[in-house]
Length: 637
Image (tube, rainbow, N blue to C red; front, side, top):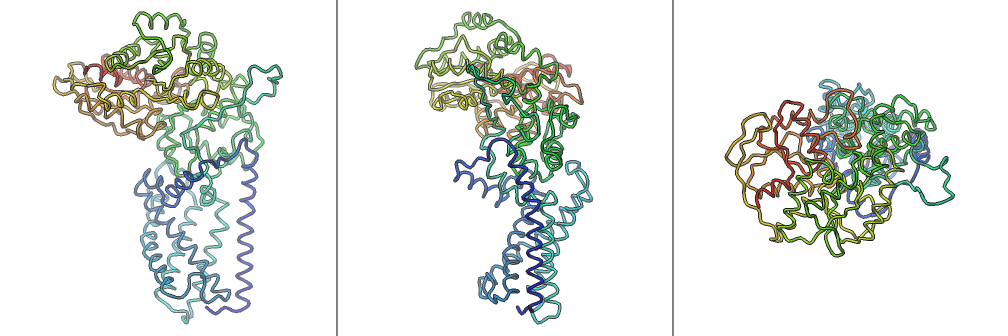
């Protein structure tokens, strides 16, 4: 391609100016990220690269979350990647390298053919995305983004100019050079726009997806030395009090947000009419970080109400295509408020009870000891499986029935197990409500007790205990101790032939829709608890269904199930507070379960059992059966 010296100079100037205008705001944002606490993790490098390829290059999360828009976005993204190389080839040719970087032979023709195959469906994809954003406009997308429209126009211009110069005209055509210039100027205009709009995610998401934690909403422990005489309590860091106290990854996430609204579509607080909107949370954080990153969090009305409405269910993080971890930002801000003794009044009894009696309801530990003794739960001895009962199994009358059912299953299978009479609350609710100091006080006592017991395995019926016990390993619990949920453990017993379950008949109790029930094969609807399905992963939703299938029950699924399940409303300490805005989250979930019309609701979490039972009662269905899988299996012994 022949170009004059003047054209080369102009192109060089355009390139330099465009790169400079791209770099300046990027550097500004990198400096903001640098102000945050902690570091961006790079461990397990190979696993991170594999995940990066799956989620970025292959657009896995983008497609799975919303298939039609996801495929449209993926096609546009892939065509854009191909265009980058083709554009570089054009630039080199304009500077006098006749072969460019793709050569002049068959490979370049093959490459152009692939690009044409990708760009044509990408053109229709961008048209669909334009219609979706500017015509159909689903609420999750929020206000109109004119930069999105401009980017769409840029991409259509790139596709049109490529098709025109590659297949419909030769270099001798007088229109060829002007069209090439339009192509190049469009690319450089796009480059300048990227860091000045949400499309900076094209650059920053390369890092968020690489650096994000392998576990959902992984809380980083604070270093609190409660025994040292040199502790400076006034200057001890206990949570985010100004915005730069938030972690580097949180800041990176807010700057990366693509504004797709998937978190908006899946947040139980937002769906039920609360102030909390995880998308707006991150956009407000972005705005603050850019305008005044050293601003105080405490007292900021933008965040002070919404942070206390999060159930830490993880639906936002699970759905996010660029790896943003919204619950961590919320927990860090809660920590800052609690460190300043500012929190909802409804959390005061929780904190006081945990501090005085090491359980959330102020029961005396002797009540648990009496229940354990009267029902002949074996005490833990070295070499046994340790059953971590959790506060609900120790103190709650309804959930004690689950504990007895699980005991029956263990005894039938001949499991050598034991419980700890001195067990205290894990501190799950305290930690997620922002009281890290109280959490670590409870954790320290439990970790000392567990390390001394030194079990090879801990099994628990509570997914919240499961998660928190695993977090103890960041604070000194022995790494080699295996910690599993009872659904996992029971599945293992069945697979090993130690536990045999007979199919059970239906029941005549009222169904979850208020009907009369049946006497034929039992029909159940399974509710996935967030801390088992999303936090544990595929095994967390598969095992309970496999166990229920062993009973011969007909399993029905609600609309939102498995890793996309809808929260019961209890997590994040919210079990111990009151919802004062919108619809109650458990009511929303119960209404969805009622539509299935099954005989029973089955669960694998004590929090879910309490919230769903209350929800059915509020709906006038007093005798609806909300059964733990342990109870259902015990019926089949």
